[in-house]
Image: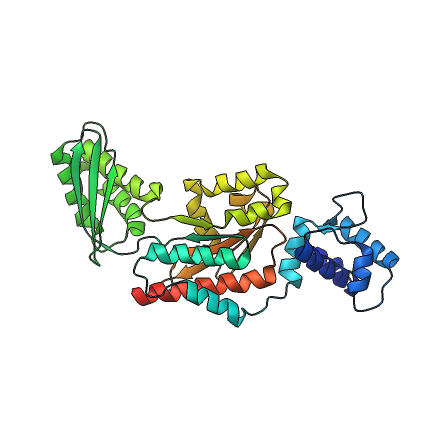
Length: 351
């Protein structure tokens, strides 16, 4: 499949690069006279207008107003990021800001994530996002405790000594004996496995040992597994800082409905795992522009995201920045990348 980049000569690429860089810097349409002054070689405004028309025909530019100024389309921005973006190194000052604002001695991982989100927001002038790590500690023991006819408590004792208590709604008609039977069954098959590994194992064991479990015990086990897999609150949390930065951006503030849709998207718990899946699809920083990313498709924003890993090189979370499509990608990419690496080193050291 050919790229529009293949249809562009050197002059077209220079005009396109300069125009996109100007748009990213100002957020305003860029005209031929501005480009003529910015280009190193002497090119007339008339020649540049012809080149801009060709680029518009390729779907890379469009004119938001009647004026001669152009802005890049989503396709144009994608082409710029993939083919022309020059990613710089993170500056010494930015590195120091990240390191000084994320407390490596902090014992509360959630606070580290809050700090990371805040520093990303401050440096990018966008919204900083962090998906906190899933609990990866193996399970040592499970107990179910009945609290009321419609409420029960599951106590999870982890191999590293942590204890988690979670309240859930058990199947109708549950009995203490059924809960004990379910706990015994779980303890026989999940010991030494993490919560993320447990779902498939339990489902398989239920099929193999269906005759050994009465219907009520099966329902209780399945209810517990569904709680751990889908509720998400206990093992995945999305932290967002800097929404006000987006509201202050004039291009976004002009359409508050799109901004509101962005925040609505962020608050949908069923989408939290997708945020991590975006990062898991490939190592390193990934850039999503506008509708390329389903999670933020309605808002027309861009997302720069990078996964972070534990000591076993397993992806356990992600950090990112949301902002307008005219983000300074060349600067934001190394900031997100460095933050992800720093958090990974911190968490690996703890484990």
